[in-house]
Image 1 (cartoon, rainbow, N blue to C red):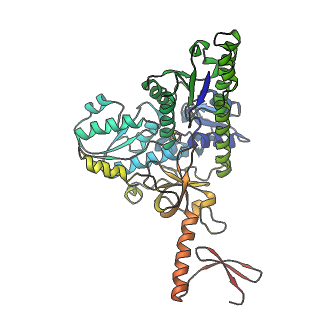
Image 2: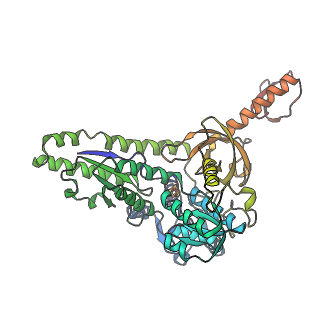
Image 3: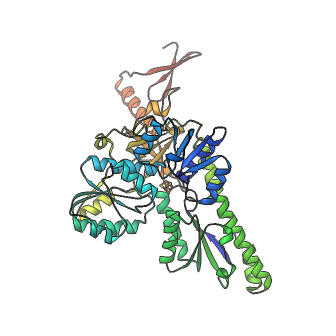
Length: 491
Ligand code: SF4
């Protein structure tokens, strides 16, 4: 039996960041609480509990100390109440969920009736409703849309883990009912990639194993996509859930995992599958050929290594969060980098205005979300400033990331001092992060390109430029003219 891993599976950037933050704050400080399970994976939550991260159902169960807002995010009331009670908040809201909250808030501020496509009982959706001051409708199917009151201007956002085809179907339904429908693309790229990879793999195997928490929304959607592809699909939480009869007579089995499934569980599941296959081969039921194929199953080990390598690469880029993340919301109503109410239009991301039934406008809007080319310089709007990265809206389907090393800042400056939410910046597209699916950008290189261009023009025209002295060194000065330049003492 051949075991094939999906091209994209397991921990996404939002979950990985949340787990790292929890690990960082739990080492040395007590008590530490996460508001609800940090992620939808009971085994990983239990591992973190062993490290001192307790799970509280709400702030009522917190008796002081540190409170972690999980990757799903929370409504503004949670920040307010935590501040009133003097609790230290560590905000591990996924950047993509944060972006979704902001877009919903901006739509509400602009007078749109916000409609959220998602599961009304999911904490991410409940948090987003809170950011619209409770004014959003939540729909999860066509019948929900039918039940809505008469609609005028509608602004649509989707839970980050929704299936794209479901969102498209419900947007089409809303277009029949509303005077105007404006759609914000809020499904995160990690979700889309894992869904596309699962669909592709399900079409090539006889059985799919989907690994992840029973209550994990994105894992459930992966399982439903595989089933919709006509493939026998089993959703398992751990290796213990596997049954040997599932693999009898099966030649190819695919494995995928939800965005909240840690690598160690995926490895255990694959290890157990290999044991089952080897055991069956030994009974002679599948014969020598299958035994040999199991022994040679190249993809599982290679795939697992890929998961580790990608995680290591990402770790190298994103410094682990410290004990007191600078982006934790201040005492007050909202996270530090949330825009004030009414400030939304200036930093609202470009959105697709899609009048009902206007297919051409829809096509144009979709074109506006095409992927920028690698090496291209584009303008983006900062939607979140973190100690280790900027989240930037460049009009792509998902947000894009400028890592710390690709920011241009004065010596000693922090990203929070150098940048602000809503600020427009020029960025160079470095590529797509294969594991996480987001675009990688460089603001430093865009600034250097611009500086070179300006310097050439000034040199050709024989003009002067202004710079800032950064430091005095032996023989002259280091000057910032958009690039680090050297001015000899003789000049
Ligand atoms: Fe964030 Fe997407 Fe992961 Fe959810 S699935 S935590 S939105 S990256």
